[in-house]
Image (cartoon, rainbow over all chains, first blue to last red; front, side, top):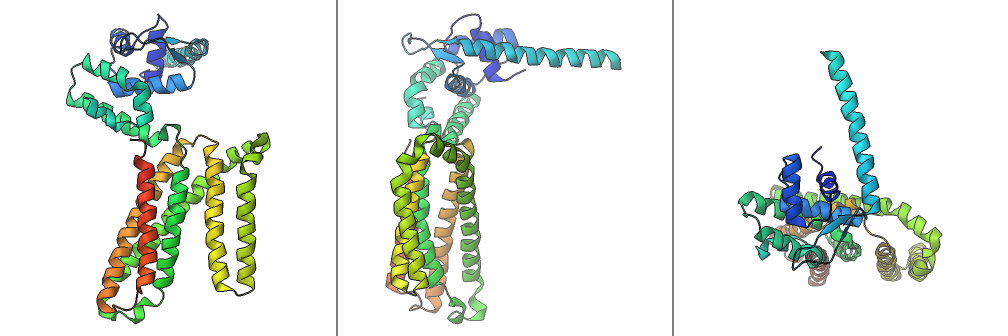
Length: 96
Length: 244
């Protein structure tokens, strides 16, 4: 649930953002404050995997956006999470 | 704050450095943030940033020459050191041997892990790139084996060193064609550490044996051991920090 890559993909699903905007958005919707090193480590990995792509830099800040592969990867991750949430909800209900 | 970026490899800094710096300038930089950036930067270095680890192979090969010279020089050293004074040289010698086993194992594991990708590369046309170095290395190996069978020690030694460096060259050519696995960065770190440990322990052993038998280690042997061990360790350190 606090995987930086998944959080970044989720944030970019509402539009392109640069590093600082990503940090603020992730803190807003997930309540998690990523460290700058953690954020850029995850951006590096996502870009290497072709899940996000850089846009032209605005001054020194470079926005990123989701690619087609990134959208598919996010949808797959959400489906996996949904299965886990459903299983946990069912089992918790049965236990109580 | 720019100083913090030096935790990252140069190639990474060139790509993301200004963006990260802009982000840091927009945020309060606490000690926790500094630690996060430095830790992430060192993590990128360990990942190797896609840089081939072929220089480590060359460093190890250089070091092997010094190690073999050390092994040969140290034969029967107990005969010249009184039994009561053998604790320090024995401990130093054991450290050299243990580090040699660890370092050699790390190199062999690295080669074994790279083999599947190497075989795939050969099947998809990579043989043309490595054919020449592999043929030269194979020829040198055959000459070394023949010299050993014919009891020609100097020819054997010379051709064995040629074979060692020729195989290293072949392995480097193959390594440059593939991005290293993450585990290769860790194995390279182990190899670097073992070289430094062996160099230090060998120096202790040489000093303690020299104290009791100044003529046991000749100047030429000492020169070969010191030159190749120090050059190998320095080459490995250069490979580690060349990306800075």
